[in-house]
Length: 292
Image (cartoon, rainbow, N blue to C red; front, side):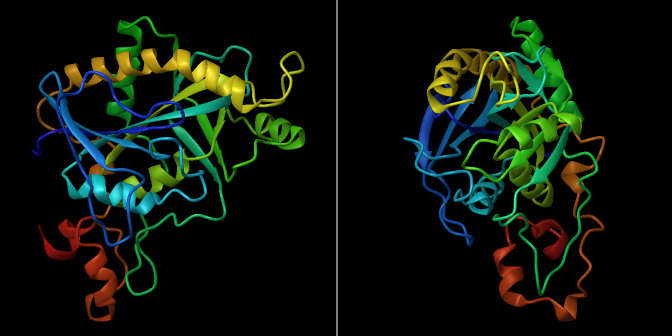
């Protein structure tokens, strides 16, 4: 088994990971361009961790302009086996209140401007996204939240919109009626690319607001989100820290195969594969393309 190395992707309001020891930074080059920020390497307990600020320090990138492929490729390139993603989100239920964490298990992708795959013409692959979240990692996050007395819900559907605008009231009510639990702007893209990179992915959706459907709370705005995110940051650090300290030294095989998702995914026959694209896939798909 591979050594467990956990990538932590920090979202809005989470631009560093407290508790990292033996800290060092490195800018990682990828064939897809530059990641959002340099990677920060360290250790929490005995577990190696790599932190990446999704939007860059200072929050420089919008949800639509983040180079998601470079971010995931960079994490794969340095040996990350598991990703814990932290994201601010809106809630569609009164009982999922601001300050609560939702360990989502399903995703609905409503984005339309993103590059959501490493593959394409010249090397086509189809991975399963039936279960987009790695269940063992999600359960570890739930256990950590419970141990830290952080209110959380195990499971939920995250709808991912393009942004950067917040929802209209009609959209918010429509998502609520469709059964969504929370709403954000980044999770679906990361989950798809992590699956293609054979990295187990789980997300903590940190509720900051009620989107705009709640008649008593009105429309969401950045000031309200930032205020709750500041309160959430310490709780997020506690949950992630506990998860990392309790993690086994070796990566746990994913029961749904998220860490072997390319096993039967490639459909383009070897003689017809584009060598330039294959070269770009050197980190993401090395195991299946080159047997390494």
